[in-house]
Length: 252
Image 1 (cartoon, rainbow, N blue to C red):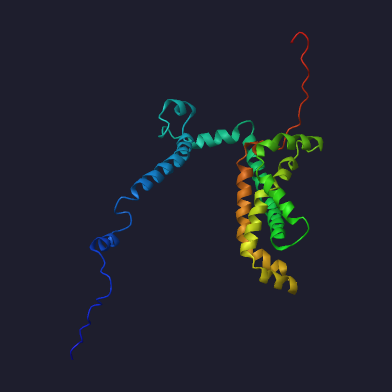
Image 2: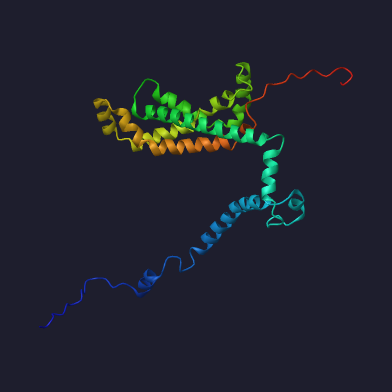
């Protein structure tokens, strides 16, 4: 049985040989990815170098820390360094570590829940002054935290919250960026139809919380990192301000 020959399509445009050869090349074979790869590797080394230095420095004694090469190991004293850290000043480092964990976890959970509730309200409910209030929230995101440190401290000092964990936990519960993030997430992840049906059937909470689980987790992780990274939280609550006596005439 003979197979009929198929005539080539004369009207189809011929593909140039250069284009065929270019299409057969693997991505990056022409050297277009060489410079971006070197650039990213340089940034990788730049960001990993401090972490490697911390690992190396934690294994050295105080003398080796200044006498030996900074980016390589010397005598291994990691166990002794850990013991000295926990025994310093009758174990004050344990108090700092406990304060950091308590303040960070409580602040992260509270800020995540409050931001999720507020963001969901902005996303799914219509009320008077909604846009104005949300613009106020966005404006507060632009205020740097350092600009609020002294006013917040003075306000809590007048309220009698000095030497109290609430002086650190309460300001950390407010997260304007978390409210903005949870509003965007609620608008995208919680379908309005499913929410309306859930409200009609009396199961609105059963609809909203599973859809917002990952958003709440992300917001809580962000709040935890912000609180845990602040060096003021390892020492405990804000101390009571001391009155400074004016200088005498002799000192002047």
